[in-house]
Image (cartoon, rainbow, N blue to C red; front, top):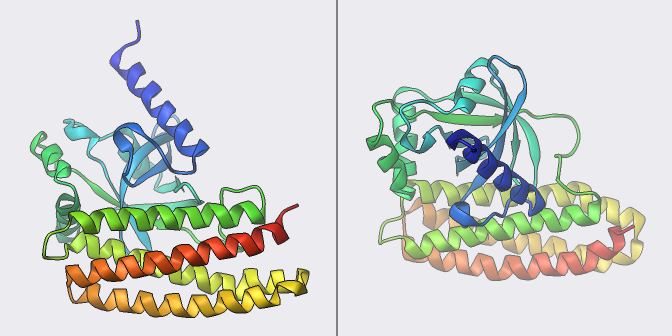
Length: 282
């Protein structure tokens, strides 16, 4: 008969397969949450081990993962692995990248964990169940030459994959805003600002890389590219307005700005897909 460890591994493998098949979207207990796949090198075996873990956005440079193990008395195996081998692989659904894992310490760890609890009280319950201090680990992307590694088979597919990742993150932000009380929580502020930064970087990359490539290959797309660049400028203005109200902690204004951004961004993404995907398809 399968033991508890076998059942846990089988459950994780099903989540991993669903995550990869749906580029980050899963159901069951992880549905509607932020999840990534973390591949570590075994501390003793040296073999790769992939684990689904929840994460917290934490600005432009890193994401945070929490070694809760459901409140177990022992740290999870992936945490021991990254202590021995700090270079790991992260799969976000849309992207795969190498990262450097750094456990947080002292006040930095405590503040990050407090933000996690603020966004989901379940983290506090895990801490109450164990005597160990649950570690918080920062994952810093290791930059490389060339464009990011998008989990797509073609430039046309890559557009849809990246767009859907932004749609999903914006949907999570709207859900979190809807649950928020009169004060804008610290982690929700970080989530908003991280999204704003990521969207700004994406549009900058398109302006400097994708759009010139399309223009060179398909001169007939000039009108569409002009419109897309103008939409980038309008969206940049909305991002700045959202940043301002988030910095001010104004929840009601932040909700309104997120809705404005959602409407503008969805129309933009849809138009871009309609115009560019046919031009980039094999």
